[in-house]
Length: 95
Image (cartoon, rainbow, N blue to C red):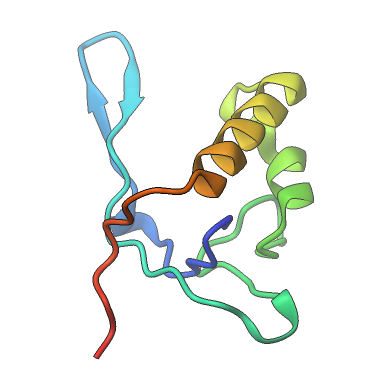
């Protein structure tokens, strides 16, 4: 959501299973893009009937993913810091 990707669907999410615990796999199939009006919705529902691509929606859903709200906020802050860092970008240039 932080990069404008809305193509999140069940085949784009995966996890490693070690027999006891699921661990998310690295992100893949991400297509960052600007959105007109800075509003977008996800392909999948996030919380109830809400598919709004907002941090508020993510925070509302945090407990559904066994995250405390404070932990979810920390994850979001970490991602924002990483995105804001200057340096190499691995995204392909669009032709």
